[in-house]
Image 1 (cartoon, helix red, strand yellow):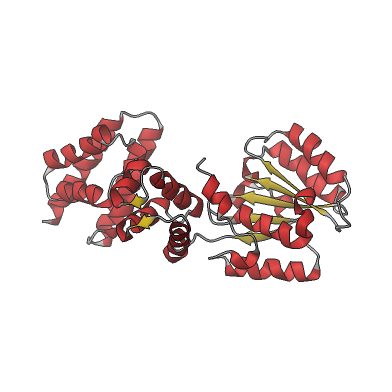
Image 2 (cartoon, helix red, strand yellow):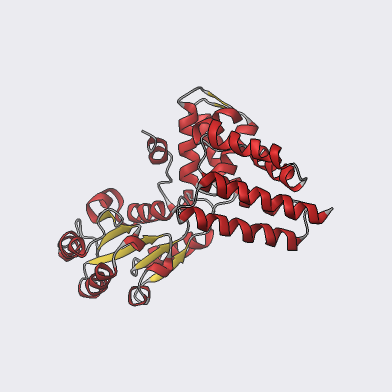
Length: 319
């Protein structure tokens, strides 16, 4: 259900894409020559990597694009057997409708095992006359060097707030939603440059009411308001440990937030504090240590209280 709006409002052509002008320009250059290399689309989630591949297929093949494109999610099928069976079977077959070659999109290719990537490398050489590979990944460093050297790399950047705002306003208008400015800013804050997440949040809020408010956004995302986290930090830096601890328990117990979520929001708020840079460095260093202890299985409440205690000590030295 929640992917419905993403599919409906996904761009159908490269010209409709936003925030990736350099990538679109390079792709259009290859399209004009009707000669595509093997490609790697690298960048954060929700910025248009899969969309770019689908737009490319539509513009290259026209109405027969579905017959000449195979999309596999490598995170689901990450073993070498997938490469030796599904990928090989598709890559060796001839394209449909007189197309020069077929396209194979491996979504989340950085999840492939090393053995699977080694097998893929060989297939990219063997079936070059009949198939072009597009590898979509979040972390380019997890793709082995032999594959990188055989591909043209396209780096996708995180979308700007303005890009996301225009898309959400377009959807709200089409769906006849009342999207309050505060709610729009809340979606942008929570989505962190991820268009897919932003659209899903809007759809989740719209399932409650056609009037999208700031409260409904934080309710469906189970995120703390920035001002709540900011208040907790300011109380700790002011030496009011008990009050800061109450705010922490409010987020943990009443809001039901996980410790990692609170740390992520703390990280964003620390950078916005009006403090000397050396103090911010000190706080972030301690926050990183707390994050490591939580991932190692440390007690959530004790570790977060210890972090607040450190904030109190730092604040006492600022007076």
